[in-house]
Length: 188
Image (cartoon, rainbow, N blue to C red; front, side, top):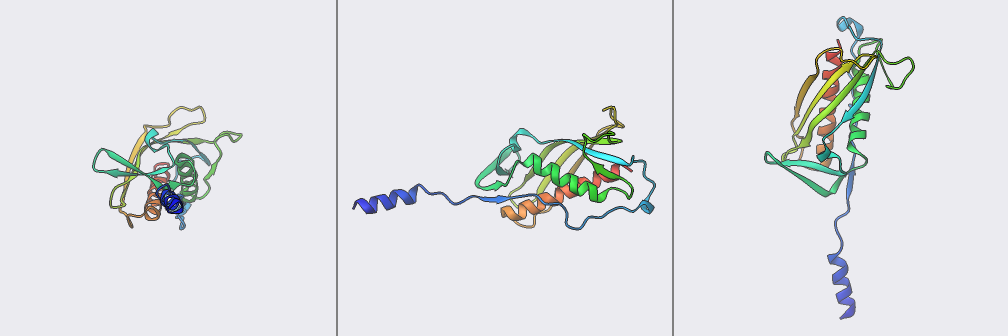
């Protein structure tokens, strides 16, 4: 009787194991050749701050349920801070899409970069079908920190490849690659 009660209590206290996911850079970069169009971008660009909403600053993967509800799963988690992953993947995707002769450098480099890109993400989540919406505002800043033009806003909607967390992470990675493509195109 005592052994049976102990086994029953042990079974009630366990929860499914967590699974961890990462965002990944686009495996097929589409480097723009210099012949594709005249570029007005300087030779060096840096990716500055990338900020995400506080609601996403947590280890659980966010899913939007309906219009205003966000649901988090304790079993589906990011392998690291989401803002760090978004910045790393965006930098990799952006570097692959810059015109030939333009390189992505660290924002703290000496001499300073010709342009620093600052990105503010206001939405980055999956819906119940696995579709992802990424809304971000970005602007190009000169070496003195002053804007080089008006800020730009992009809303990217990527259809889901599935509802499970692995498919959502893949779809979110595609959305980051699409944002990088828009930023690179805006620098021309």
